[in-house]
Length: 316
Image (cartoon, rainbow, N blue to C red; front, top):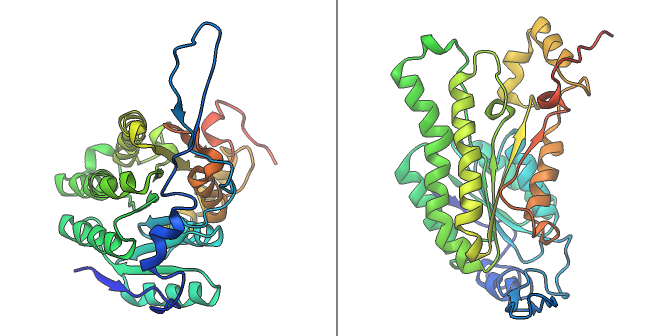
């Protein structure tokens, strides 16, 4: 069951409490009513079109924005929470481990970030529903940013996968983000300016050793990213994805403890090193900023050049 943690550091009298979020958003993300007229000698009948960035908006700030980040206590997710909060967003995150979540919340509070959280395993449908209900309550029915970050992996040859393992990967990696997006849609639409960012992988572009099912789930996410970009554009909701290669997180520590395999990874990566979670979170944050308001439907690799390395072996 999902258990919501309070928004640390924000008492009822705080001007930045959840109750005040819609009014704050009205100065930036919630109400985007200005329009620009586009004229052309040959297209004189063109109507005025909504402009997502009125002059009053700081294009490089998330002040007034609300965000939900799934799996926000480790690795890339944790870096994303800090990145968004550092840019001024009010963030709600979730994790399966309540003790770990509370520790992170205390740390973010000490940094002056506005972050709340829920204990939730998003691989379960009922817990996803409860999480979004909590987010709707915290943010008064408005959500500007949804970061679908949760994912897992099972590494083995394709013919060795059991039906249970196959189902687990698709339920966690794809079904959960599909359903989370469905649930969050009314909140994103109500905010007036929404941004969805999926955590994909280079495995959705190229073949990786023992990752056939993982790659299939990420390929599905890539196509969902493109479809939502078109389907939700009329609601001013953008949809993009980031596709990391090996990032230095607890999830890949065991795999990369094999020195021989680590050297193989380096040999296929033009930059010759692993990525850092902050090198992914900075891109995620950019895709949520007003400065990226004309970017949608894109899947951007964060991989040190790995996905474009056809045959360029390193010999150090």
